[in-house]
Amino acid sequence: MSAFGVPAAAESVPATAILNAIPAQFSGEFLQWAVVFFVIAIIAAVVGARGVAGVSMTVAKWFVIVFLLLAIVSLLL
Image (cartoon, rainbow, N blue to C red; front, side, top):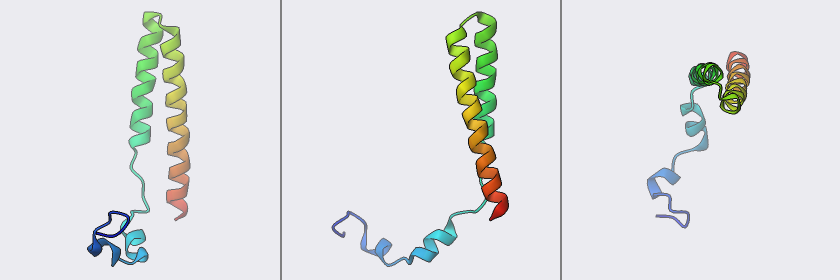
């Protein structure tokens, strides 16, 4: 073990190998979560919980924005 708690075998891996192991494509999990929060917002609005509906809609909006940004970055790389 090194001073940082990393095993000695992990220290010998070059940084380029680690960067090449990270996929350049992103999954659509942000979009799935956006749909989940949108459905929660719709149900909360029907029930009358306006505060929950507003917060859920805000979270869904941010998930869509993050999804779009990651999709653009993925397409450019």
